[in-house]
Length: 456
Ligand code: GAP
Image (cartoon, rainbow, N blue to C red; front, top):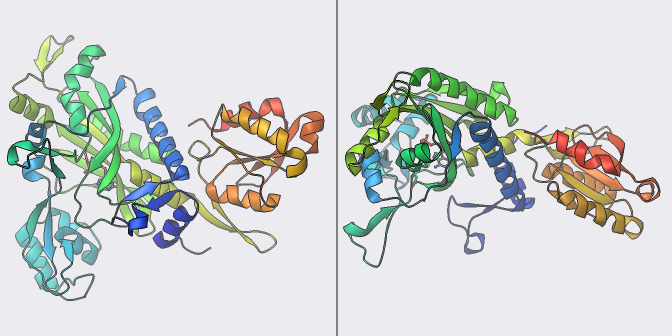
């Protein structure tokens, strides 16, 4: 089997309606992507899976859907206005722009650039003659810090007073609403607030398909706990997130932890989970011990108390926070990379399959009338019945073998063939995508059979 490349995956995603280039008819807007009908389903299924693990099955966890636009002071308090930046330099020869830490990491094959100061980075680049990836020369400008926040203006005047930001992370919504959720849900520490939503970053070096984009979705969960209880919870969430990815179908041997040496301004401990993409390992999750940093900052900047009165200790304190954040688009990308398989069949032909776990598959079932002329009516009736329970598709065009292949490549786990037996004795044939084995079931058993297989 040929190794999957990002180019091949990008083309496949476009061809079958998973992901399209954003603004394509205008030649695209670089690094923006639109999820097509199948991609949108896949992404929603991943969000549902996250919701199930991080909210529904996670004791004392509550979901939030906070506004993307927040008071500008939020981003001063969080430190993003002053400190959310990347070290940027330009190649003087070919005028391309790069992140200095990435240049060094790619050159060295490790993450040493993460822990370096500006001076150390410049020294390393010059001493090792780190080349520009585009033109191969080593002739760079000095490093400047480049703030990643998208800034816009509210109202009609474009002045400093009306500056407003698109949120660069979801987390601040959960911190600002911490007491609202605690009071209304009568929650006791430890408890969690999670949310799924868009975030925006003016990334200098986006790329690798949907891996690094300027608009993306995060699935973030903040666990509020007693000071001192944080480290144990931090270790728990590292493993909890890893198990989540394995349940999504990512194999353990392609996942690794990466503990941070250089910590972002808000964290006292941080660890990424990285997945082995076709282009190398890349971060898909972060677990961060954010201490009481964010809540204390909001207390200071808003002048409102963020303290929690612990009824057991009869004591007030600002809780510590352990964050577990998953990049939704990166989880989708990892699942797509992992699901794609090319198989050589006995007759020498090849088939392409997206081996999603059934709960993630865009369509759970496809209803296929064997002969359109005779079986269409019954097939449509069954299609309408199944659609009430789960996403079902219907296909009557081409020979049955070709229709199976199309369902294989879009990842539909079950194909239901409607033939004379369906009309005569109410039975259907169900073909399994992965084994290609077929079983016969009574029509009344089909919903149960499939529903039992799509539980996450
Ligand atoms: N609230 C913490 C936070 O935002 P982060 O590590 O900067 O932490 C969290 O981002 C996750 O969001 C990352 O693990 C990654 O999966 C995803 N992510 C970050 N930047 C991204 C980008 N430019 N494009 C796509 N996903 C991104």
